[in-house]
Amino acid sequence: MLTQWWQKNRQRLVAHYCQCCGLAIERREKAAKLTWLLCWRCQAALQVPRCRRCGIECLTEVDLCGVCLSSPPLWRQLYCVGDYTPPLSHYVQQLKFQRQLHQADVLAQMLAAKLSPEIDVITFVPLHWQRQLWRGFNQSEWIARALAQRLGVPCQAMFKRIRATQPQLGMSRQARQKNLHNAFKLHGACHNSAIAIVDDVVTTGSTVQQLCKLLLDAGAKSVDIYCICRTPEPHSER
Ligand SMILES: [Zn+2]
Ligand SMILES: [Zn+2]
Image (tube, rainbow, N blue to C red; front, side):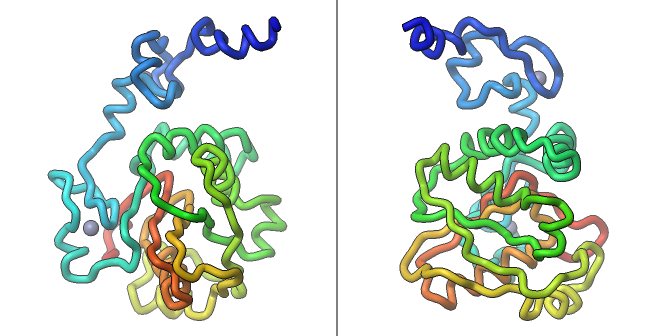
């Protein structure tokens, strides 16, 4: 009985502090927001206008930016929390490099607040087995599973990375395509399904583009990209 009462009133009674600026989050903010991790000021700082298709920052919110108009990505829409800058980059690094696995749920909570999902299944960008063995886990899988639980959608591993690839940063478009050629394999049925691919950070977009192609070639109805950070590649073409 006491446990039930505590569960019901815990969130109302315990003070919450913004994970970014450290200030207390007021009760009326808690009621208004889907996430209590950041105060409204810090949440507002993440809300920059973006192209809905590719997720890159724009002057105003648009369905398609100039780049997407000339060469549209294969996916339907890209959802992200923000750029790869603090505090987000900090959480991603804590998850990825310091094994703070609870951050996966923190990040999933932030992302879930941005989604209006009409999807059948969530999947994730795979790691090569050697990297997964070295790291011990796949950060995108952890975020995907936490997100699936929040959204009440099944999470399924659909890809295998059959070849280790070089980091894409700084590569030309041709070099990236060569680097990723035959790097992934699809397993599992996806016919006529609306699928979301989870990645922690999307920079060049080449990896998720390759995965989209595999899904669409196999008959997927649509593919969305769910990522924590969407950030343009510095000083190079996308
Ligand atoms: Zn704050
Ligand atoms: Zn765009």
